[in-house]
Length: 426
Ligand code: FAD
Ligand code: NDP
Image 1 (cartoon, helix red, strand yellow):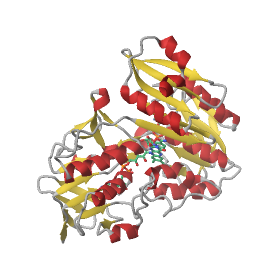
Image 2 (tube, rainbow, N blue to C red; image 1 turned 60 degrees about the vertical axis):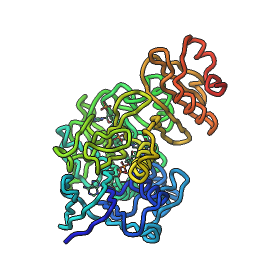
Image 3 (cartoon, protein in one colour; image 1 turned 90 degrees about the vertical axis):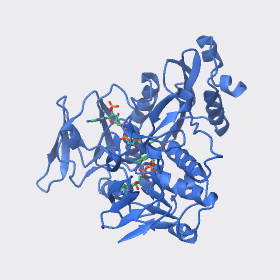
Image 4 (cartoon, protein in one colour; image 1 turned 45 degrees about the vertical axis):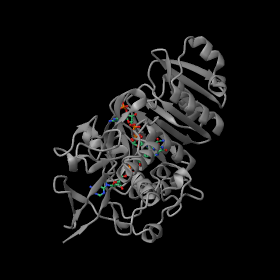
């Protein structure tokens, strides 16, 4: 049993949706392209799962957030794929790949062959078991990576109103879910090992602003420690957690967001890996010339920093996907992928954006006791990163534009004095 396509996208997440749109822009023919996804639904905007999807009032539900609404593009419903002659092979896990023979084998036993393959398998959530804690398959312990996880989380939230939640992890999932839980009238404790939240990006001063804001919403922070065990009732439901520092926290609901691992395993030993992802060149092409990799799973050259990085953010997924399709369909016209890293989050009434790299000395600006403030990172005499909370559309565009230029900074105190005017003026 088998089918053959010219183009196959493996994985049906954010990158797959944006790649499909780009394929149609470049004139793919009926029946040439398929998307194979373990998920039972067409590609959607994953960021909605920790934000609009969890709201108690008017929550976001499919089909409202199918790609590519996140970039104000067309919304690609299953009907759209049908109309464009794109085969959606959903609810189907690929269990092995053979890049030499250009074939994929599905769990249902079908062999799918391709001329070009785009790997868009994303990542999986790390589980507590990988850190030596057991019991995270209890019915009220929730991870959050896909629609099934989010649907389950909503069910548990609905039975926990007025109760207690423990959020494990102080990264993106932890911060966004904690805010959503508070909005759902659940008492939240956040537990994480670092001295402050968002340790990979925020400085202590920036983190402090968000932690203080969360405290005004009733969130309790337990920092510098990790979970050591769950406490269960006779039905196997978690009723509380024990922490390494001896603290006990009661829990009706536990949300775990302790990082991810890219889904590379199908290609280990077949393609070159780097920094935990599949290594690609500036055309998003892997060590096999018929195979491209995009999104969370790809380690690509970030030209502006002169080094290979793997990014775990939606903007990189969207743009790398589009670039790979252009490189496949119009190789002579496609220049190198030149990406400026962009991260953002929205929680409660807050909203921040970050561009570039958080390396070097930090120069703060704005009012940290008010609603708008920011920071620049200056490395080897150049501005390399910018963070802004509470900015306007024009201000965010300005920090992005200026960060890409990497302007020379001779006087840090002058940069501090100018603050946001520095980017607006350039
Ligand atoms: P994914 O979107 O994860 O898609 C991978 C797909 O591959 C999935 O459908 C998966 O089922 C499928 N797959 C994997 N292996 C197989 C296999 N063997 N066979 C078949 N199918 C397979 N980023 C931001 O910048 N801003 C945000 O606000 C933000 N919010 C987020 C909120 C949540 C809850 C999560 C989980 C992530 C969020 N992110 C956010 C990160 C962003 O969603 C990811 O960077 C993005 O989804 C990566 O896209 P991708 O296509 O590479 O992978
Ligand atoms: P992150 O990497 O953002 O954060 C993981 C957090 O968990 C870190 O604070 C980490 O600490 C901590 N941690 C690690 N191990 C443990 C442990 N054993 N016990 C307690 N805490 C631990 O990952 P998330 O899970 O929050 O997010 C998953 C993915 O989803 C990421 O790719 C993220 O980019 C994406 N996402 C992005 C959003 C956005 O961009 N707005 C929103 C939601 C998700 P340490 O740093 O010390 O390892």
